[in-house]
Image (cartoon, rainbow, N blue to C red; front, side, top):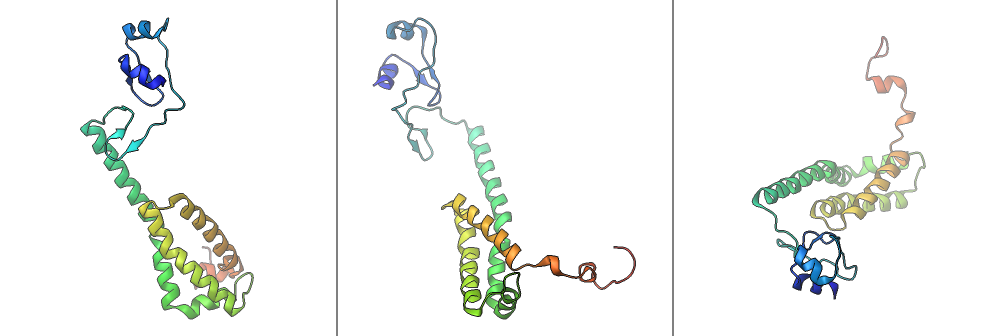
Length: 177
């Protein structure tokens, strides 16, 4: 395999796409000038904590610290984005009648059995979805489900466009906003 020949000649794999070949090894391998070689059949294997198993560079302590900080900040950002959903699920559980009324008086009024089924499914998504996003289990799929869920609930059940202008202003009925 080409990768093994390069390693035996003293080549260093900087990344899976970049290989540093010493000049004497280039002549030994028959290269007339410096080139970059990548064997498409040699796929890098990622191992936990050690980088790429095919000889990738080790991270310095500063790079590892930065990587840990970036992971922590990404987790905090995801937490902030999904924090509202479990509380919404709890609201559906503890104020079930209000959730049923909202489903019954939405843009498309639903019969009680269908509304109950959708409330249960929505509650399950609001509990399981944030866990998936935070733990990284089917993260993108859960986020995509939430996109569709939020759009569907906003259009079907939150008929904010039908509120009278005075209700949007609060109790004031005269004067400007």
